[in-house]
Image 1: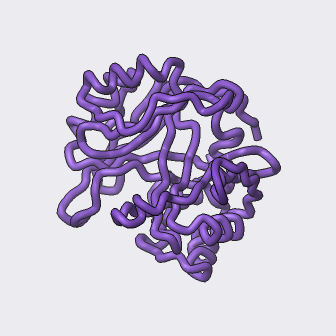
Image 2: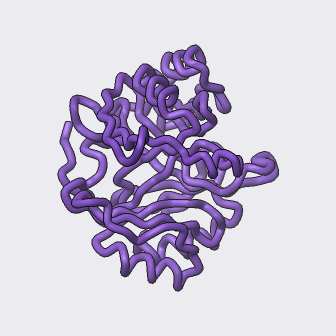
Image 3: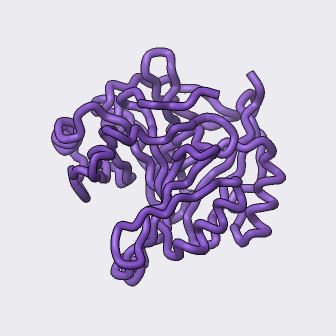
Length: 261
């Protein structure tokens, strides 16, 4: 499969895990997905770990700061979207009602990033790649393959993201559930669903999906490694079989066994 050396602006390009226990988290994901790891020092006894498939960076993780753990910030996956000009995109996002949480700043010679929360409350990041484009592999087994927004006001979310990234939308009925595909031209770049009362107190968020070859086997393996199965392996007609999991450190993620096309 193709290896990425760059990413088209407006597409998801990098997943990053901020975890309460870096060592245990690294062990969990490397065992679950067969990932390698490259620990890069970023401070005293602190590392930014590149997670790798076939020696290529496909994701990253790091230890959450103690002050954030004390504030009960949960472990979480963060989704990065590629941009050509991070400063300009931040200004546009702010005009559309987003709040800047961090940045924009330069990450060595790797690239530039910014962290934002959009008007409905979901957090996402922007990445302007320089020497590091983002994930070198996507949409193949054990790599990120999809990103999905859970919003409490899908109309407002749609307006924000379509103006920010010039996305178009395609609304479909997915087994009785209204679902929105965000698109660039003919390419589907993300999805969105509206949260209802069944979501309880779960905040709006972007969900990271990793492709797997066998959803049931990986879900069972994750559970054996200490994960909680939030949504058991479930079929979606014409899409595949997916499951929602919470890792042993509390971060939510999804796996999906896509149907062969």
